[in-house]
Image (cartoon, rainbow, N blue to C red; front, side, top):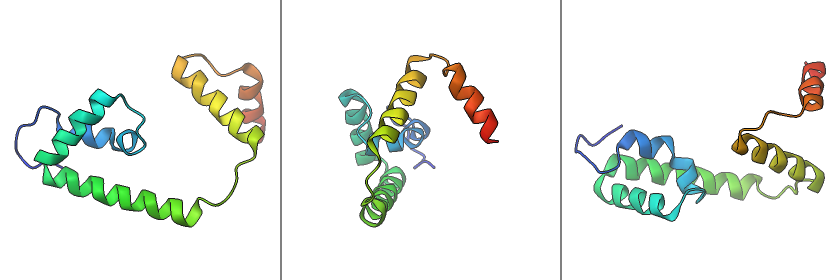
Length: 100
């Protein structure tokens, strides 16, 4: 998707990282670049608005279940491992293989 106009930040980059932008999981400098892109590019702005609406709908309809704290800690620990580039602990790999 593109408006056909050149932008400082390419449409494909914006759309590839749209959920990071929506969740504010990117540096402020990148958020500023994306905000500027949305001001210039109506197709990307439309996609952003649609995804934002879906996210709000999901939160409203499905955001009421509490996640057990041990599950949350396990998931967050795994995310941190992945982000740091470390391999998964061997027991996790074996457990996953046994579940299949």
